[in-house]
Image 1 (cartoon, one colour):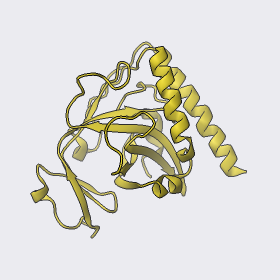
Image 2 (tube, helix red, strand yellow):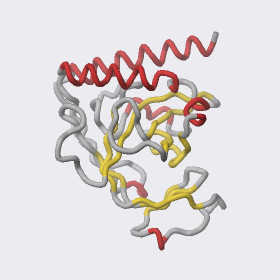
Image 3 (tube, one colour):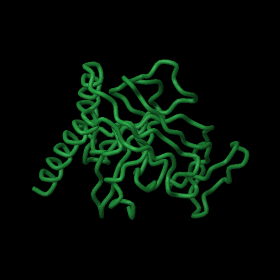
Image 4 (cartoon, helix red, strand yellow):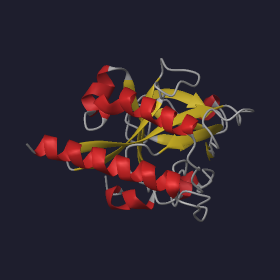
Length: 211
C-alpha cells in the first residue's frame, strides 16, 4: 500500500512539475552547485515554453522511464550504476554505460532522490562533449560537469586527466572511469522544479540533501 501511495505521489508531482515548468514565464538563474567541489557545474534556470514537439518528447520520455520511477533496482538491472552520491539540490546520479547519443526514450543518466530506504526518480540527464549545434529538445538549456575521476561507490573527484586519478577513492572504492569536461542536459520530468524544466539545480529537492 505504501508503495502504491508513493508511486501516486511521484506521478502527481511529475505532472505538476512538467506543467509548471512549461507554463512558467521565467526564473532566476542558479549558476553553480553549493558544494565547493562542484564549483565548475553551472546551468541555466529559465523554463521552456510549451511546444507540441516538447510535449510529445516529454510524453515519450515519461513512458520509457516510468518503470524506474520508484524502483532503483529495476534501473540497476537494466545497467544503471551509481556515479555520484547526493549532489546538493540535484540528486544521486546513475549511469548506463551502454547508452550513447541522444534518444529521449533512453537517457544515459537517471537522477534519484533518497529518503531512508526509498528512492524516487527525479530527473533524466544527457551529457555531451560540447554544446550541441542543434538543441536535442526544444529550447534546451545546458549545465556543465567538470572533468572528474569516478569510483564504484559514487565518489567523484575533479581531475584534469585520467593519469591524475587514484586507483581507489579515499574510502577504498575502485576507480571506474574518468571523463573530460562535459555539457549536461537535465530534464526534471519526474519531480517539479520551480527553477525550470532544464535547470541543473532544484530547490524542491533540498530536503533530500542529507541522502
